[in-house]
Length: 260
Image (cartoon, rainbow, N blue to C red):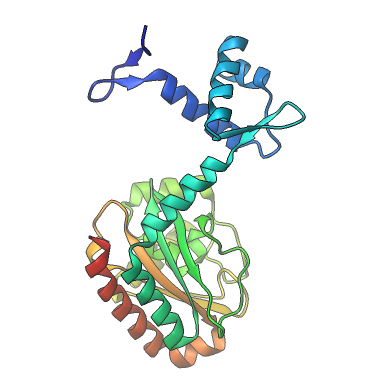
């Protein structure tokens, strides 16, 4: 007989698919891998059922079976994430805009989006005039309260969801300038929203400041996008008007292509 279904959506949901996804999430939270027995215990499965699910995921390369008998996430997970980031970073027109912005200013440019109410850095193109920030790589970002692109995206959340986000990820003090209390962050976001430009001055890394704007047409949509640039703080004080002008222009031009 086919997979059992669980009511809750149009046509119900397939329990075996849900179970496989939950197992992948569970494995992903354990970088050193987990045993089949652990999976069986965690999900209240018979050992044979757990092995069958894991073998299927290994065959499809969503899970790897290590020599020590433990299971880890496989190469297809990385491939699917690459597919996601490519789709989020947009068509070639957007990549061209971002590269032009880097070329014009010499500063690194970041594209970020809010996915499932999580700040996600989807593209990074480094410029020669910006210091390298090793932590800012494609993937989920847990320092949204301290980065300009993160602040811009947090501002798009209703206050209750923003509070939940901060409660889940915390407000780590990356530097002595990092905003670490919610009322201060909320005020910062309200002021920046009125101005249309989100700034952070040495809140994520000493001697580095960042400016960001939201892509206009996506502000109220499900996955808003922000575009940001990181510069030495001494450059920001001098070139802030030009930097924000270039960012705003790029965001406006980008809004034409994102909806394609």
